[in-house]
Amino acid sequence: MTTTRSTAQDTTMFDRPDNYYSLSVRAENMFARVYINGAPVAYHGRLRDFQANPSMEQVMRHGENTITIDYEPFNVETESFTPHDGVRLELAIRHETQTREVFRIDLFNGRFNPQTQRLEMSDTNLTTGRPLVLAAGTVTVQPQLSIEPQPFPFSSGRTSSEFSRRLTVTVDIDDPSALTPPFEDAPVLTDSPEMRDKLYDAYTRFYTAHVNNDRALYAAQMREVIDRFAYVRGYKGREEEALDATLSGPPLSGGEGEELRPLPSRSAFQTARLSFGSNMRMVRASDHPIMYVSSQTGKNIAGVGVFFCMGQDSEMFICHQPPR
Image (cartoon, rainbow, N blue to C red):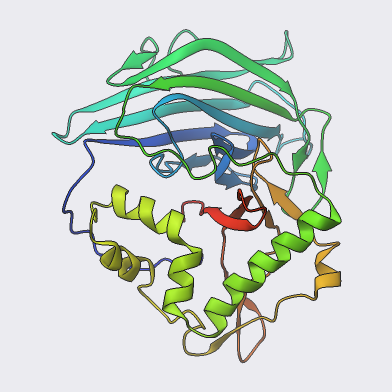
């Protein structure tokens, strides 16, 4: 089921893709939101170092790909959100072929320079001391790199902007077998009452699939995500098995001792906090309106974390599920 639970999945491979790609992120003394082609793939909002390795197959494309990190530096010693020489970021792509040949390509490797007041790229890997690798396998890093001011929204709803920045790196991935992401041609969204109404309708349809434990309706709502899951996990031509894998675990309507929290009203949804992708082509309600709660305590257990895009028929559809 599509929640933040950790569920066991069948790892049997049938028709494997020729290449696998994952993003390697290591950040010190910074909060971070990580996006691939505008799609959120990782979030870090705690006062500790951060490491993540999200898969790229669901959101990458053949050709040009954009990796974006919004970050907010922090200083534990001074209890402030200020940059210092301990602010550090390592960003790389791990490319593995079907024959288990592995390449690591450095996208960014640097730390904050107090003299220039900027996060600066190093000539060498800060961990190993080796020269950076900017091209290997099917991946080539483009020379353009930008770091621009960008407000950083925290999960609490508070926004910081004085020292927050957006780092953008562009890479070329020469892999014609890569699937085109479902949000590739989705229009840019504007927060408006009309858009929120359409988003609420989409949430209502998805909620109905869960509350009724309706497998067919769930599959129809999640078709874009399931198709790509089938490709990545080697279930090509075995969509029902891919659906079984995504539904492993408790039923859609909740497991023992848990229940679905009611959706907010349409009017309440008009003031709900929203979370967008970095290029504003996808959106979800930040507080996860589809939420499982304990039937005994009423406390939140897990949320259904999917993003919606606007389709050609002007209806919202599920276009992305961040890695769990």
